[in-house]
Image: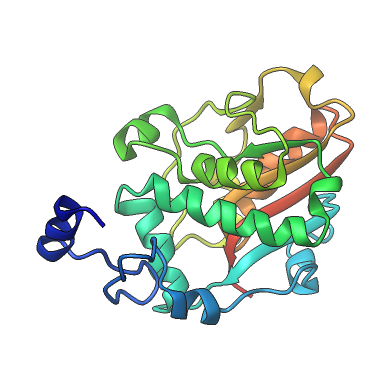
Length: 225
């Protein structure tokens, strides 16, 4: 490590986004211990599929890590949303993508989309964490990601602490597919940071299906089971 980076780490220690311990010089974003011990969700976990059963026609639903309140995965999600860490989001996307590729998932999709933020909210935050996650997944799977294809036309209130019905009602008519020719007949993976009630993903996914998508898959970094 160069002297400048060493001095910077001494003055402003880099912390693991999961356990908040000080990172070693060779570690990036997540420490080795958390790499080994974070609670991963099995590929094809049936409880994820059930979140959309009877609500949205989804071929595959996969999440990388299991969310628990006040746990290490919540710490990661907090950093993604509120600590201005687009590089962490892309890092998590690459890691998740590698796990998906090992399961052959790259052979099941043609296009990657991310749940968009409203331009006002994205400007305020500086980036959309779902876009950065999608970039990482795209790189690992070698499947194209289109940032401009799905847009959010209406500013919505925060979804935190809303019931599932209220979340769904809050999201109606929010999303639009800009060019249906790019989704028609395609196998699309829709990406977001976390799956809780699934209302946001359900509304965005419905627009993708209406635009002629052949198969829809849902991917998130975390999920509450």
